Amino acid sequence: MCTYITAVISAGADEATLSQIADRWGHGWEAIDNPHVQAQLRSWERYFSTTRKHCDCGTALGSAGPEWRHRHKDPADKVPGLRRKGWSEAKIARWLEDKQRAAGHRERKEAWLADQPPGPEEEMWLGFLREGLAQGAARSIGLLLHWYSGDLDERISIVGRTRVDVSTADGAVLREMEYDRLYDFCT
Image (spheres, rainbow, N blue to C red):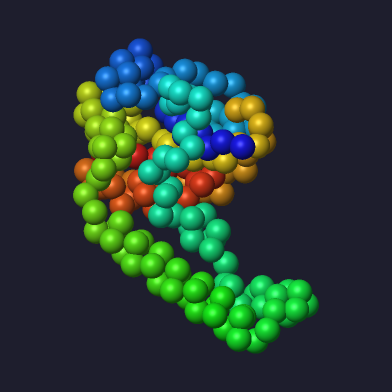
């Protein structure tokens, strides 16, 4: 139903300062209780919602990641079904050409996106992460993207953790984030 961006910090982090920094950079900061996520985190880590609005659908985070690419499957897989529907070979060939042209467009867009500087949303995230870590409000700040089919307490299987040095993080790192992977940004 909706994408949400949540955050993970370790105990001892200055939650009040992080809340102020999040607010300055246009993000929410509210502790959430999801026992399914908490069971997958380290015992000393805390879990937060960063959403200020209804949801984070349309976010730039993860917009060029594997989930985006996965949505565009090989069109040749659909050819048997098209034949069963009575499509002619000429019509199938034209359809496949259109799909190949669209795939080429997506690949060029991905390459273009990878070379782009951070946009406004990515700058807001990078600013929040860099300021929070530079001020010592946390040793690391983790971000987690998830497509929720219900409430924020739904079961999520975190597929792994990726450590990211915030000093080298850029817009491409944020755009290529994978859903359900926890990205630990640190100095």
